[in-house]
Length: 157
View 1 (tube, helix red, strand yellow):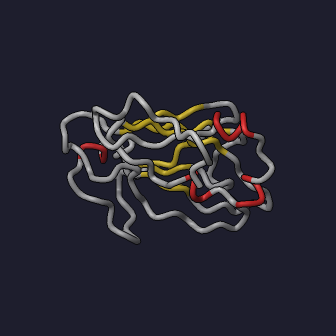
View 2 (spheres, one colour):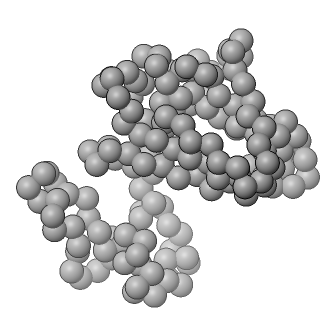
View 3 (cartoon, rainbow, N blue to C red):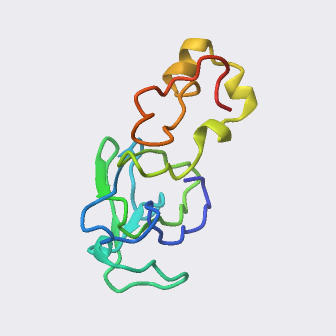
């Protein structure tokens, strides 16, 4: 979260609100690389919202919204359907966290990182790094083709 960055809208990281189906389709984690607190733009959540069948409304302050203060080195693991968003960073310093997500095999990622990687970064990677990061991997078309996922020739970008 950059200094002076405004408050994020509450959102979910799944394609649809749950409980459709009645089990989690995505799990996320935020590893705090800096302290997360009121000043640095800590993550806000609405407890129990992962069970709602709706999206959070824009510009609404929910009465049970909680700001999660955590020390550097802490980790938050949560259902991807939980309403969440960052707070305002009122400091002069960036607040860093590593956000990782796991979705069931049939769920598309939130972002296409392979197409979203800046060309200047991509060009600095060697072939082994490109393979490790998935640039030679192709999502399967269906259950029968998911065994072979490697693209033989050029990276996917």
